[in-house]
Length: 88
Image (cartoon, rainbow, N blue to C red; front, side, top):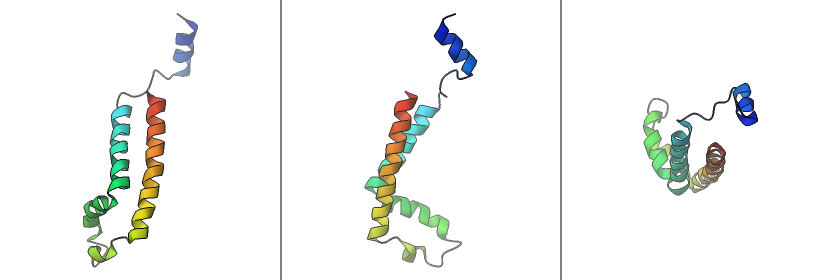
């Protein structure tokens, strides 16, 4: 047994999960949608507001709100790419 395999066996980390890369790719797609079309995400999630908001269409974010969503989406994408690079 080589030194590297003994260290890996002792650390308990047999490698990354096989589901990690597909999940991170899904996160990348979600982040891209948030950066490119945040209105689409709002429309999909507006149905969830029906029980709490009287008029969900009136609660749509302003242009500044969508800009903030894009900024958060860029940060989300950066983290997802970093995690994907580390996983592969």
